[in-house]
Length: 448
Image (cartoon, rainbow, N blue to C red; front, top):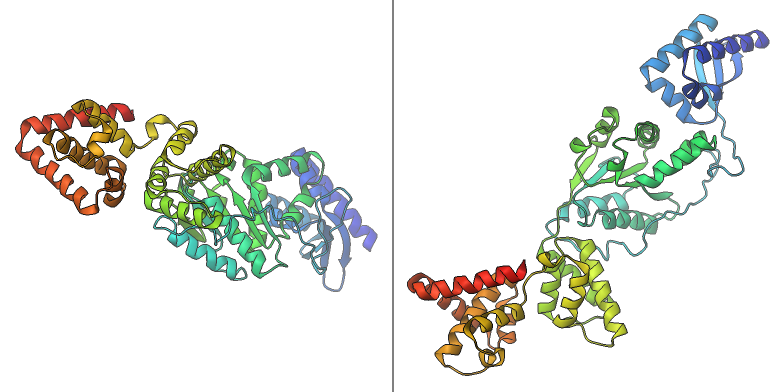
């Protein structure tokens, strides 16, 4: 009886070969083998190397209909059981039988990107809160998947690495994997070329927390999307965590498979925005405290303004500053910062400094910076001094107390008085207003 039933399965395989593309047959149906037919329960048992095979066939209407017709035509109305037998092959991706303890893997996480080094601000508060909850309760089903999106440089990669690191800290046995979308696609392509596609799928189905960065890179990679679709289904059905990162919201992922997009949207979508100047300042203070570095506050503000609302650029600037400081054995001051920043960002993106304002005003009124900073109460020096404070407040966002200190060591109230005085004079005196306007235009030219 078993021999006859095995012959029937051979007929099924012939039918599959005749009605499927060669690639589709080789990838799926060629791996389905006859195991036994249980007469008492009228059940056909088929052996497959991974759950991916059964999930793919059952979730694709076209493939399932073809499979159902072949089975019913040859075997009649029967029950079907899949028997998954995984074989550990030398040179393949590492995986073992589900019942056995799963060995740990290299997580690919950046160990320095933790919640302790992730500075909270208005632009990331919600995402950080949700991420921490997921890290501490990975077995929960809430917020699964977590889809983090936002512009480049807003801290997305730092956040998801912090989630993975915190999870590994609390649950060392969890298999956590961080992978870029590009790396996943390369692994998928290589597995196909080497005939290890099922090993590839089986490996990813053993992950407890899968973090995929830059998923927007899959928008035109249809085969990669299909492979990930089945991995996604398997992991979520088995209570595993998936965290996805993109530079845009799911609705903007043109070309992405609709069924995959629907799953991206089924959990929690957390938007991260570009950091404002205050958050950049806080990040710098945090790094200074960790590294034991001292930087004047006006320099900190200047760096924060220069970073173009990008944490990545901010980190690049501060790392370069520290390197320059060590190599040239110099303190980190405005002169060094301007030198480094000119090499790190576009000149037209650099904010003006108090020295820029002072130099421009002095050039317009034909006076020296030292004279303006001095104690003289002569009108020809008082007016330029007040204009410097007014324009420094306008262009630098440096606190009034710091502006006063840089303009001859004056106090906070003197700066505020000067700013208000200039504003009133602009409204009342057309000649004065015209002079301030010309200096303002000179500064705009200097900035551009």
